[in-house]
Length: 296
Ligand code: GUN
Image (cartoon, rainbow, N blue to C red; front, side, top):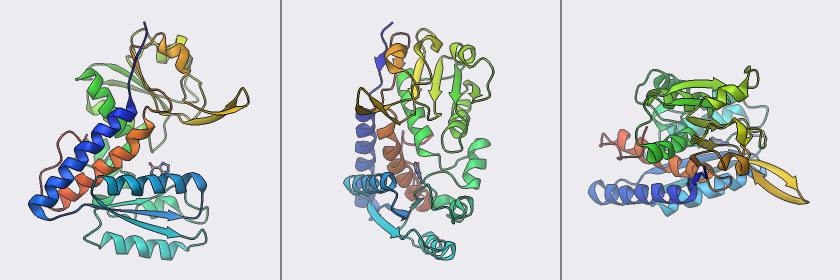
């Protein structure tokens, strides 16, 4: 079988266009412009690239972008004071504190100081609990993007066997909750899982989110399965820098029914879902109906 390639770049462009349409309608009908505040502490080069990209795409869909760049030595007190200000600013509907934070800052404390209704990352403990109990929450962007692609490809996911490889709070655990919410039978596998190849071979859906280059070979993939590769790993091959996923794409594509490439798969969906979450947060804050097709 030769897999259908799930084009995340095109899908993300479609999501952004939907967000832009609904933002335009919101402005016209109620005069409200959704606003996203992004906080970056320090000068981590990768984080700077992400934050720039987030700001640019926020403006492109017609929303207001507020960037707060703080120096690496910023005290926890000052960071918490900024978050408090953003929590109380009615023009700000979404707040994202770019991770990782410098070592002297307590990430859990900082994330949990964000108003859960503005927590567009879905990392606040209240949102984690709401998602885990099947209640309306803010959903982490990367798993939300994966879910949208899976629903688009399959329609219903009900009854499918899904394996999530990786148990991070940002991807693995919320991904498993979302798949469970769509009535999949879900296994969370990780570095201590016994017989990982056999576990993966049973899956109709494989979501790989471990951050280990090409660790899932094609012969672990069940014929016709759908493979969602969340990994973005920089490697050197043949003297060149290359981005690869957690799945060995070439061999997996020979067995899968559908597969996301790296780059151009899950990656572009993350910011698209951040924009969708900001619009959702804005609608909820104003007692308006939620945007269609952009929530879990
Ligand atoms: N750093 C890398 N990915 C993310 C993300 O999705 N959200 C935040 N806040 N920081 C990140």
